[in-house]
Image 1 (tube, rainbow, N blue to C red):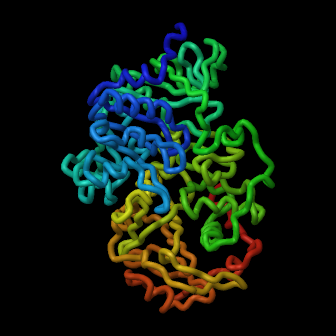
Image 2: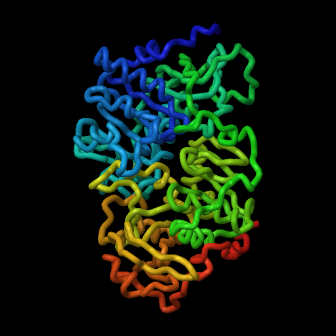
Image 3: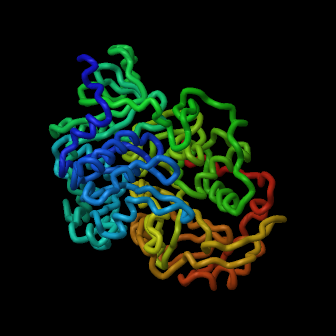
Length: 530
């Protein structure tokens, strides 16, 4: 086939019809086909079309730091419905993203579903099967007995998740939304439309999205950085073949991630010496990350989430365990050192980069040893909220892969501050509270992203690690099992919780060494398996 697949961004935008279902491959500012989304928004500005689109985003498209993503489309009338694993989010110091204005004003229907389930929905649509039947999401906010994944009142009026009984057991059924258009991103296209990803930091499900569209008679648009001669791409470097690609658009200025033009470390083209990775800075976050690191064992495969937990690999580096744990993150990297900042979602020195949908199958089935995640709120049932704060929803991205990961995990470690906004003095082996913060242990969380009840029913080992204490999810209560040196149990812990906490009869003191600005002598536990 000739180079006729290469068209302009404006021509590609004109191919999208009113009422289309459009699926976009991205992960916030990583792998976002931003120029293509901008072209759709520009067409709407001049022609008032396309209108009433249903947008599918297994992971977020765009962020608040330079990649607009879905915000290019956040125009009244352009989007009717958005179904996303996550949304652009950021600090309160930055303006609320435009998409959130549409959501909170009920001008569109907005749903937040688990990222892995959204990928599953694409595979089911590709195979002409009737949606996803899964345990993922039971008793969380995506369960129809709670919010059914609806992020606003407009969405709540139109349920998309159903609880069903199959073979005598309870399941959630996520019905398919069959996409007509897929917008994917790669590094290189040849003249036939074969796509390679050599400068990308992740393989974000574009192949599955293209399959869903191709098998249902739609069109696949690929945004790339460059076009090369037909046949010049090595066979095994082609991740999405030409028979799944209809059109190619070129953006020579395509960034690798938000504010990063190109770094070969991100795409695994080079590997750096361990000395190139900075240790975690001395900060209260580091105290929590150190205590979380103490839960790991030699040879563990560890899922790692955003937030304080992202510092744990740097703790292991500083303590002399550079390769003793294998990290796995939802964007697909396995091994190496997960990166921070604008490169979060990628890993330096990764052993492999799995396609994100395959990584989620691994997570959903609980194939890893332990997951290190974060929390915003905890309640009396052990429920965790990371997905929504009603007062400022854009401060959170939604559930992302959190629900997929936690459903069948063997062991879960949630890290966070005991109160929000507290001030501390840390050093010389102890912690003291200078100014207390807002309570985060509440009677009922605003959004159930992890179900404590389901965790108990599945016999999951669950810890909540904070700067001042460690709490365990027991059969009938949350139990304080460790307390920081320098902390008053009654004043600083029990009185600062709206949850009645049980105190372990064998209450321990957290290791004083983690409260001192020096390597603390981490000893990883013995391997759990061969």
